[in-house]
Length: 201
Image 1 (cartoon, helix red, strand yellow):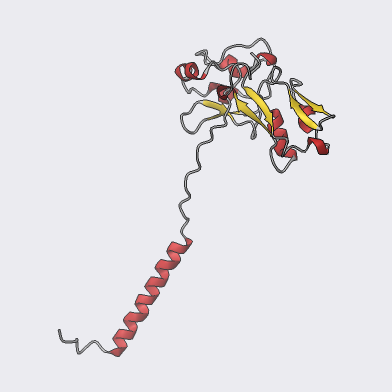
Image 2: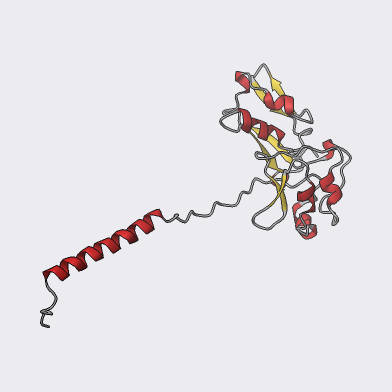
């Protein structure tokens, strides 16, 4: 095919400049565009609110009405992103074991049942990583903040002790540990992941 006699060197250079400028604009647009971040995996370390029945029954009874979420004074109860049920992430906001348990009173379907007092609550049990815990270096912040006196210091062994029969799994210790230390050394294992014996029953 014969070359276009009207298309000279000047036209070629002009088209080349335009092409390069267009490519540069497209590169800049893609470079500055926000990159799609992979979705964070859903957390599985959540606790059910105080008074929750066993998990299978809870899922049957809970209507995802959010009444317990809206009435929770400290805002500890939130909606699980996977199914909308009420959960607590104790390292973020711990359950304060309110005197009158407004979350239980707000539940109309008996997914949360009344408890005699805070010691009757069983959301989980705290466990300590002694390798990470700084109790041996003088940190006893969680001990003084435990609302049910389930934590104590073994001064002979220089480490923290959890009394599982008293621990209700409120997560206050976990929240405090996160506040005062670089690494969280005490975490609440959810009730659904524990045997009845481990829960102090």
